[in-house]
Amino acid sequence: MRVIAGSARRLLLKAPPGYETRPTSDKIKETLFNMLMPYIYTDTVFLDLYSGSGGIGIEALSRGAKGAVFVENSKQALSCIKENINKTGFADRSEIIGTDVLTALHRMEGREHFDIIFMDPPYEMGYEKAVLEYLAASKLAGENTLIITEASVNTDFDYVDRLPFDIVKYKKYKNNCHLFLKRRAGKGREQGEESNISGEF
Image 1 (tube, rainbow, N blue to C red):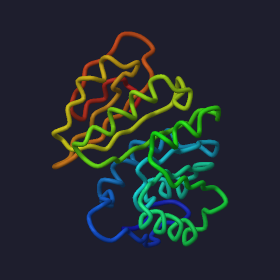
Image 2: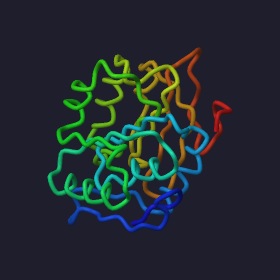
Image 3: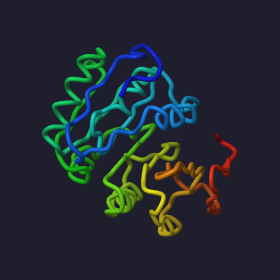
Image 4: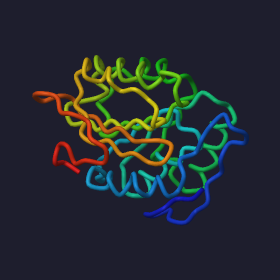
């Protein structure tokens, strides 16, 4: 696992041992950030939920994001995040919160909204639904915040229609997918595999 591009390009990152975390593969990470690059600016603040090794947030920092907040509950993973942030030189632009995601979101209320929120929870456990339901009523996700959920391809996202979010893109891979959401500005849109539904990607 490595940083794909940017100031920390090619630096190898440490992953937690065992199967408790599931680092996003370099190939999928590269595809993801090819889609995200139009949304990463020098003032972008990135929230990496269920951070694992911290690879996604670190990639955003490497590509120019102003700052990143990493939320992770595993002690082994937290150790990896700290080591990887120090190795890549991003400690001064990073914040690590070592607790469960919903508790962390509660603690962060009152901050400015995040520009990009990414989550990669354990597959098929329903965690992404709980987080999206929380963000639906939270100012941490603003009008222009882009929310990305990594999930199993078997995940049912039908409930999203009942939340104040539009699906702006659904990217399917072999075993998993990325769902891109923004706050609803008008009538909801339908989900289509790899389709440029909103015209924004």
